[in-house]
Length: 125
Image 1 (cartoon, one colour):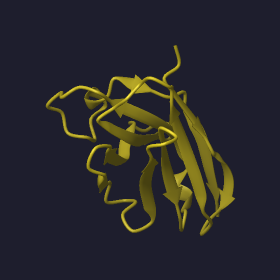
Image 2 (image 1 turned 135 degrees about the horizontal axis):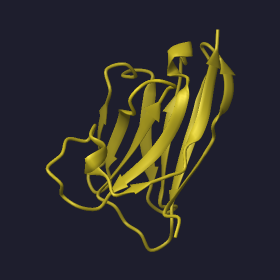
Image 3 (image 1 turned 90 degrees about the horizontal axis):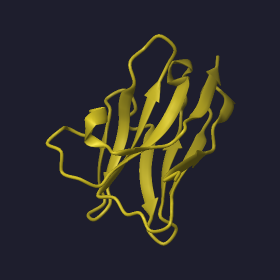
């Protein structure tokens, strides 16, 4: 069963904005939800995370001040608002969710046990 569904990807010009959504399937709850991205030929990297019970957030240095992760508990949905987009933000963006304490930092894929299918974001200069 698909647990996470992303949406909101697309093409945008540099300096523009885009909002990604990640909806968790009904009945699934997670202690943290994050966004990763992977550009061609590069490793998948953690972009942002939100700890769902306290709302604490963390960001990769490359997106601090430009991206904002938020949650709507009523809709079981997490958002990634991306502003001031740059061509280097071009990547496939993946939603990830974790329901277990793993001991891995939030930037590690091993910290999550559910993944979405990905949504492409392309930023043109």
